[in-house]
Length: 186
Image (cartoon, rainbow, N blue to C red):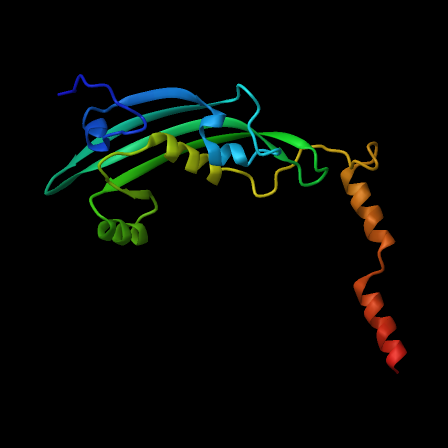
C-alpha cells in the first residue's frame, strides 16, 4: 500500500520510498551543491545553471531472506572547468546513472562490497538525496578536462599537437644531455 505522505529528497526514508516504488525528479541550482560549485573554473557556478535529477525506489522480495532495497539515480549537469591544454574555460556535461543497494549495517555492507559489483550503502534513518547527487557528480568530473579542439593561447592558429611538437624540439633530449655529461667525465 502506497503512503500519501510526500517524499522529501533531503530526508528520504529509503525503506518507505522502495516499498512504495517511489519516484522523484527535480532540479536544483548548481549553487545549491557547494562542493560541485567550487570545482568550477572560478570557484562559483554560473548564475542559473541547474542540476537535473531523478530517483526511483525498488524493493525486491526474496524467499527466506530480507527484502532488498534499491535506489536508481540519474543526474546531469553542465560545469565550467579549466581546460588543461589551453587553460581557458571549458563547459563539461556530467551524467550519472547509478543503482545503489541498501543493507542494514556496516558489517553486511563490508561483506557484500567484497563479493558483488553493485554499489552498497547502509540503510540509515534518512538519506539526503541532494548530497548523494552531489557526490556522484563530483565522482563524474573528468580527471583532465579539455576542449575537444583547442588552440594554444600563444599560437592561436597552431594545432595543439604541433605546438607540443615544436616545444619538444626546442628542448634537448634527456639522453643527449646524459651522453654529453658522460663525455665530459671521460
